Length: 429
Image (tube, rainbow, N blue to C red; front, side):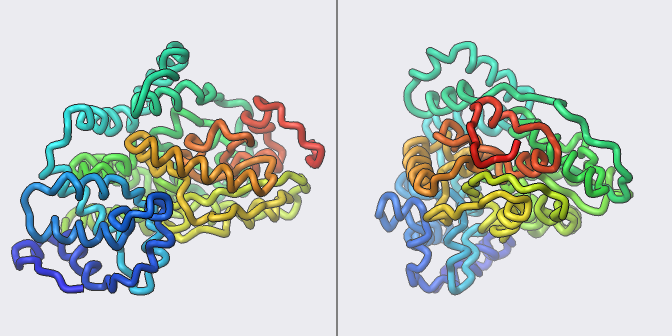
C-alpha cells in the first residue's frame, strides 16, 4: 500500500520500520481470520486490516489521534497471530508498537485510565508491590469480588491466586558443567516462585546451573505494551547491564515465561537507532534460549498417563516461533498431550490486557476454556505466567509445564495438583 510520510518523519528509525511494514501490506484480509478480536466482535476496525488503516492515518497526519483510533488500537491484544498468518510478512508488531507510543504522548486519556495505566506500569513491575497487593486482596476478598469493571477484575485475580510456596525441594547436587543466567521476572517471582525452583531442579539434573540475574528487575514488557517507551527502555538498560555483569561463564540467558522471552527478543527494536544500546540489546537477544531448548528429554523418565491440554501462549507461537517443543517434551515424559481446538486464538491474557479490557478478555477466556473442556483433559499446562493466572479457576488445574517435568523426574507433586486433590486414576503416583 502507498504511504505519505515526510522525509522528516522517516528520519525516525521506528517510523521508517513502520512505513516498511505498511508498504508490504496488500489488504488481502487473510489476517482477519486469525485475529481474536475480529473473530469475537466482527468489526473491521477490530481486525489487523482496519487497525493498519487507522494507524497509518494517525501517524501520517500527526497531531492528536481520534478517540475512535485509540479505542480500536487499545483493543488489540498484540498476540501477533496476524503476523504469523500474513503472506506478505507484514511486521504488525512494529506498527502497533509505534502507534501505542504515539498515542501515549499525543492523546490525553481520562483520569481514571491514566491512573490505572500508571498503577499497572509501577505496581505490577515490582514483586514487593505485587505481594503487598495480593495480601490486601485476600484480606478484603468479600469486598473486592463485588467491585465493578477494571478494579473488580484486578481484585478478583488477586483474591483467587494461591499463596506462593517456596523451597519445598532444593535442587539436587550434581556435576554442573554449564551455567545459564535465569531472569526471575516480576509477576512470576511474586505469584509463583515455585516455577523457577522447578526449572532450577530440572536444569541441575542436566548439569546446568541456573544463576539468578541479580538486579535485573522487570524486562520492560509491561511498560512497552502500554506505549511507555522511556520506562521500557529504562528497565531494558537495567537488565542489559545486569546481564553484562554476569556474562563471564554464562552461555545463555533464559526466562521461564514466554511473554518475557518474546520481549527480550524484541530489545534490539526497542533501541532501534541507538548506537550505544541497540548492539548491546542485540548481544543479549542472541544469548536468549527458551526453556524447551535447554531441557532435553531424559530416557529414564517413567510414564505418567495424565491427559494434559497444552495451551501454547501467543508469545510462544507468534513471538518466539516455538509451538511444538514443550508439547514434545511432555509427550516424551509420558504425558498424553491433547490439542486444543482454536489453539491459535489468544486466551485474553496478553500481559496487562485482561486488566485494561476485562470484558473482551473474559469472553476470550470463556471461549478458550470451552475448547479446553471439549478435550476431556485432566490438567491445563502452559509456558507463560500471564496465561496461567488468567486461566486459573477453570475446572482443571492450570500449571507451568516445567513443574510437570520436575514432578515426573522425581520432584514433589506440584502445589496446584495437591491443592485440588486431583483424582487421577490413570496416573502412577
